[in-house]
Image 1 (spheres, rainbow, N blue to C red):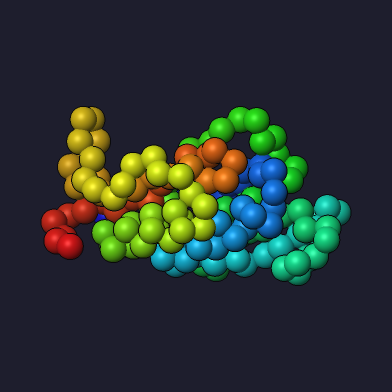
Image 2: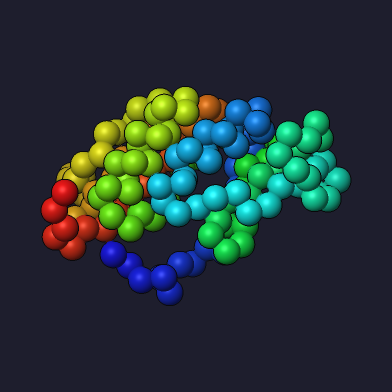
Length: 144
């Protein structure tokens, strides 16, 4: 697995059509990867609480907002985002919890081949807006 210093992105985000529905989906899918809601904003970029009628953005991370859902970005362009997992089990839990929260299968957990690096253990699903999200563990020989 790549070490923590191998991150090039500071943060990223996607537009969603239903902020509450998408926030619930991502809360379930990202929890097994160690991410949680770290910030919410309203339409004027001010602080918001869960359930606010003017909720416009929800950020996930471990220490700071790294992955945003918001109503500001376009929703007609489908995105692909791969989240780093710390184990095969985390990939499997991401997939299971994401499907239970409304995700649609796009690749069950397993080792990938056909051009993927050795030990690339991943699962993919579509979020409620059709964006492809993936959890990846770069396996160095762990068994499940």
